[in-house]
Length: 384
Image (cartoon, rainbow, N blue to C red):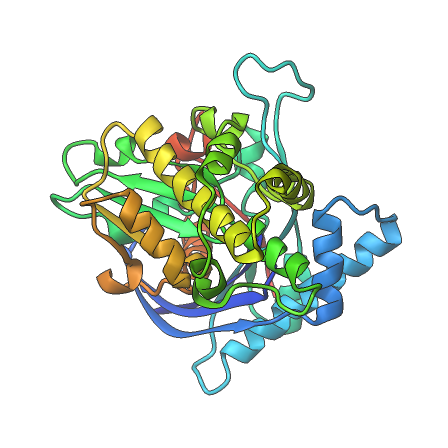
């Protein structure tokens, strides 16, 4: 038995997800048990600072250092809190907080340099020394350095924990950004057939729109109830789906750099001729998330899945879930909860597993997902 803590704050920047996980086994034969899971919200001030930086706000080096420190100590506090009343963990896997992500140039693009860049704040060394627990962090940089996107990084874990002997599945995470892992049934060489990529906006535009429409009094649409009271404007959805990203073949990754404030304000401008109510506008943004996911499957998968398993915050958006089910017709849409993997903390669990694999010397990336030329060890180890 190895107790590992997984920590992540995603592109929604709604707080730090912490998972205390009991892991046994090696490589794809691992078994996990979620011992405890909790989300620790950022302070309002820290969240606003992070969102501003993600939105392109300039920082001098002193401000960057201060933000990096604040995030690291918040992550360390989350790691300490999740252990209260529990046996102490021996390892932490911390994804940190992404504040900038630049994918490598696509085929035919003229761009320098030829590799991507991904920056996560929240230094592992601080977490290790504050908690007294060896910490693995900076998971994305090794994949990026050899030409990969550094994203998505969870597909190998999805394959280990959610593959099925005879059923092809899509595991669809809906955080701020959506990402999918398509897992074929476990036949010969099945792992080499796994595909994964970022599908586009998940909750990012919805959360930004709610904040805008309520003048900052709300940060998200609980259960999608507000959007559910509106009617989607399908001509707008079709217009938005013409965006280049949706038609770019995988491997591909994205973030708030594309689907952020600037994109939302363009959506608001595009919607003006239709005179949509706030509920109609939210319903239309929800339809964009659902339609972009389904468009992605139909365009880039070798075949449609037999089941779709949702996870992440968006899996709790009942209206979004119902729209996905409607668009996918006879393909059942459920959550990873229903196959034994907690949908709220799956991403945190994944970084606990990646830290566990790093200590074992097991590669964590999946080249068919990130576009890297080979498997590599992911993460830098910081001894307490």
